[in-house]
Length: 199
Image (cartoon, rainbow, N blue to C red; front, side):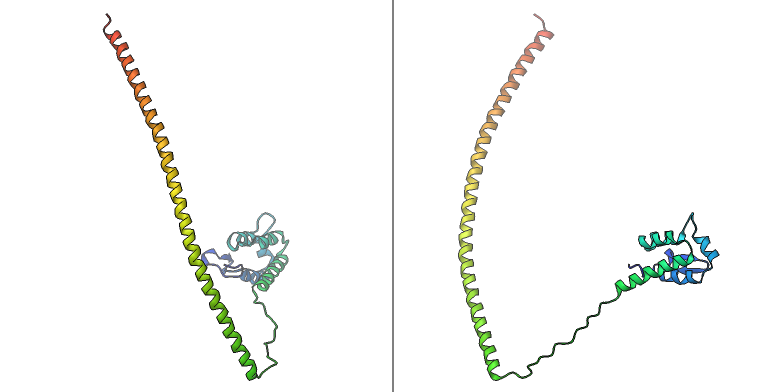
């Protein structure tokens, strides 16, 4: 939503009995409002116009200019200045260019023949390049597939070697833990039997 667009009626600024839906509406109404009525909405302690512009329209620069406005005329000038800038930004750009007019209006048969020869030569060159590209693509794709397969085989060999080393180490660790558990269990059984049944 642009700064010049109208806002929904539920966010309108109510000035007397009128609902203002845009900063253009605000500018027009401030031109006709009396200074006394303006001072009711904007003074040194508050500025409802600036609050509305800041929070509803969301134009911080204009709100700051309205806060700094000393009277109704300054506020109208600030509004008109910002409206003019916004309208200038939204204005479509105009290009002043003349349409291209060809100086050469008639083509000779020789020119047409040259164009046809050039087109056929270009198409022949393009076809040859496509054939060469397709042949090299097949060769390189076969070559790259073999490389990938070899790499995967070597990785799988390394993986199985790593797994076997880890499993051997893991089996030894399991056996050690089992033996320690058995030894601790036997000792605990012996100690408990001595406590419960002293000889």
